[in-house]
Length: 207
Image 1: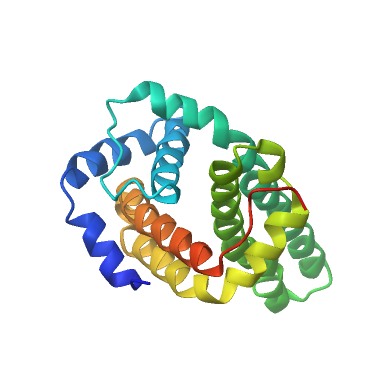
Image 2: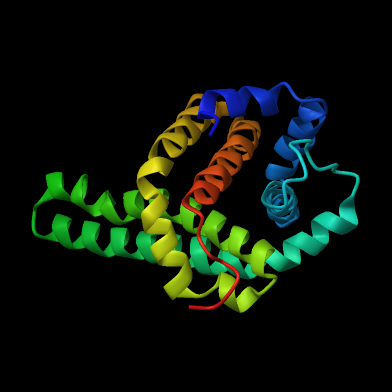
């Protein structure tokens, strides 16, 4: 399996990356419209799962991107949006309680634990769900906790370094976060797909 550095540079040096980055980075800043990024990432993961090469999806293929947006929206809500929302609520509640108890140090440290957990788990769970979706062609399987969570936990250790690289690139490029996150997301998804493929999970049937 290729390491994160090789995969990242293969993608960044591929034909069409600069154009894809320019469009993806600009789209990031447009509310509502930026949801099409999910469709683009869906096209990318679908292509990787089905071993159709690493040529980036074309932004001009709007129909395919919108179709994938519709398909990946439910997995995104279940594996990213809801966990992050819950983590923020736990952060807000625990931070307020700890400050009320005059435990300011804990409010600035312990309260962030839920956010740290979802920052690690959600990208892996979401990618696992997409792989499941494209292998089984079943949305219910892609949302099945008994399938996605065990596969996520088994792959978590190998996913830590790609996640570290992803957050590092995003942090370094924070002034242009739209472009940085787009540039970091493509190799992250590619690496996670490879990791999960190495684990040889059976996503073709319900647990």
